[in-house]
Image 1 (cartoon, rainbow, N blue to C red):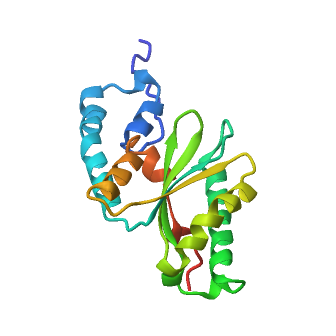
Image 2 (tube, rainbow, N blue to C red):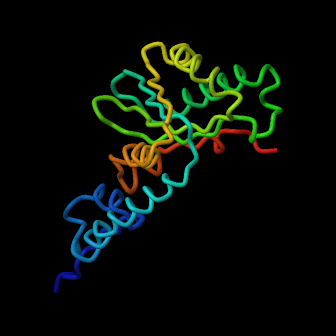
Length: 193
């Protein structure tokens, strides 16, 4: 009698995230209801938590950092934003900027958004004594870092609800995997002492 035992193909384990599950061949997702749907139901909770986190981020300026280039990778953008951060610090703090404490440097968060081209919505917290120089020179420094790019910079007003509106707008294209994975915070780029 011939061997009639079924053959099994074992696939490598993948994390139980929507992105990981959706990258698997569809025939492999046998329990869509039990594997994918519960993660999709959490999307709203992730988005709410992300928005609440942004509401707590201090900031005096809102910026849109445009690269104006097609097909960009977030890692390349991260490198450009890191260089921009270093040039801003040097402009504001002088040639020994890297030896200054973080409290003297601008703090920021960059949230990715993929519209026509990938760009970042940024919230900047700049010390009061540096705000005028930052506002006047940052767009030109960005153009030096990304010649095709443009930095649109606005002061976040102190009117009722304006700060909350800026932060809500920055989170408008939230995706529970892509947004946190490609978000950049100034402190993650700086050398630890």
